[in-house]
Length: 471
Picture (cartoon, rainbow, N blue to C red):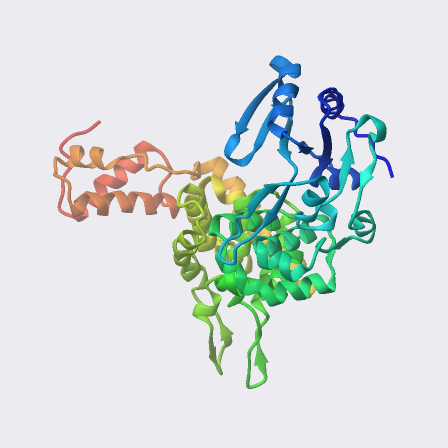
């Protein structure tokens, strides 16, 4: 089989490598994606010889259209040209120590380089030599595996995963991204090597988790993580959601299956990573709040609050960013039950104002999460919830236009309260400021300075204070 990539930059690499009498090949993910008609801007070139030397020649020929980074310690070079990233590396062979996934690297042949690849679909190479340009070199039947939508390792899967346990997560990630299946022997090897994942850094694990979460159908990946036993090692809080319990003939749904369904739902509407994380974590507090009573059956009261409190620990443990992204996920978890309450009761202006005040600019994404959270098999109930959520959305839009509550700032500041009553900082300032905020959110007064000032005067009188300075 021959493949003729259309990218001009590959033709340029072929021309220069032949002029320099170097055997060069396109290898790995670009070849796989090209066959699958998936767009790829990352091109890996393996050179039998000095990859850095070839990279420098190519970069020079491209001139101002490119820039090059050389990593001598790793024997690699990266060219960025237009939207492409082209990595050059000398062909190599690898061996591993038991306590590390970092390989011992030696110079090798193309065959050595293909043997070290994680999966057959990533071991395909395209020759850039003049005499057989475009020929696909496929020693492990990767083309057949692409045709069968199968993921398997070029060599013994037990040795492959024992050497580099991150490859177990990569197998699952590729299955989720490409809608492939993992062949039986390969999956058994993952199950039997699952404990080896403990030598992999949290950062590398999370990088693969991000890609699974961003897959078209993320539940594929999380189901495989669960079935393989890896989930218990890398994400015990999510593993704890699994299973049902029955008492007195009354059971609850499997919260793990519900969670990954919610993630699939939201994946249909958005590719925002942290909104998908919020979907994955939205019920993470349920195991800690699960209770049974003969009167109510199974309950998870307060799981939204408990779940939000768990987020800093989860983010620290998994080396996720402890910044606004974490606060965003926390906020969505804390608020995700509120629209459901509003949708099942009469929607009051006050309740909607308070939701809008607390959610701020994240209100639309909160509503998306709530709609994704409807996984009932009862279609009439599902339609009713969605209809009620639309009423909440309409009310949010109307009140936002009228009252400007989103990212609300009180019309009168604490400094102005102190100046008006000629009082120092203290408890009374907070009481008055909070009363003004609640009066606006409850619709007692409008969100404007005049009404807020008069309300401030009234609250001050209740506290025995008199306005000394009018503005």
